[in-house]
Length: 347
Ligand code: SAH
View 1 (cartoon, protein in one colour):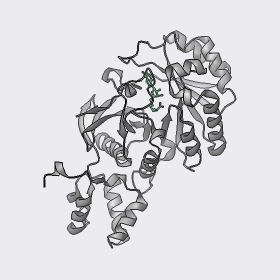
View 2 (cartoon, rainbow, N blue to C red):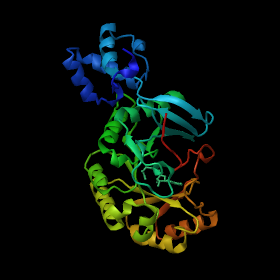
View 3 (cartoon, rainbow, N blue to C red):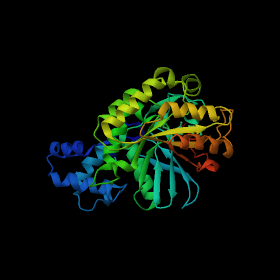
View 4 (tube, rainbow, N blue to C red):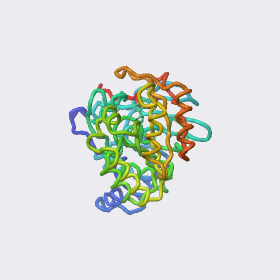
């Protein structure tokens, strides 16, 4: 039968370590075989069953009949080695997402997409402009990390769920992917080197606080009053600021982890001194820092980045109130790979 006519196989990278162990028990294979496979997948990161030299062919054939080892395909790369690179990632069903490799200092960061498209339609973000297609499987996110490792020639130091989609709207698959890439006998990326960024899905933040995992949480704020925030981010109508900030406080109480608030600076819209003072009122006394990001240009949004002067005044106001902030110089805008510029496609 033509492979194109068969139902898509399960991605091997979607299996948790326990599920893999269970599978080997079910196949009446010894446990060490599951560990061998885990190591081929996540230490040697092979993309071909035949490369797994210490596994019997009959077992590999059985696995290959049920599982797909090529969870994602690299369809195109833009940018040069040593600088920000954008990769067009092909999925089994023809959907395409983007991931970004951001090397800098001793860091090798990969920015991973969690959904094809996005439901939340923040006005200034390209990712939601064409709506939502589907959630990504855990294996499609893990696959993006492995692909990045293979392009970097080493394991990425940091993984940020800041590509296309809303990670807390695909909660189970994202958490599964986090646990797979965090596994010490595999990719071994420390939980504190993994960032989940959310537009403010309150139930997701509450759930994440109960997971007992030390991931970094970023919350996209962009405005400190409900009227403006609802205009920029429709999700604010469902989870307004008081309830969002309350969830953030609870998250800190539970986990002891500092939250990062992302604040995209849009000239003349949310970057005046009064906006900074509102932000101070909203979060002062909270264990948090603020990441200011000048707006990256997006075709559908008629706005421009704040001038450096305004950004500086804004930072000063935060600083005087004892709030730590950094101004993130957006990388990759020449590739349309900066924050908010990623889009999904369909072949
Ligand atoms: N859905 C999640 C993950 C996306 S992370 C979230 O909203 O947090 C991408 C970050 O870039 C978010 O903080 C997002 O608000 C921000 N962003 C979106 N569009 C942008 C733009 N045009 N310029 C700068 N930042 C943008």
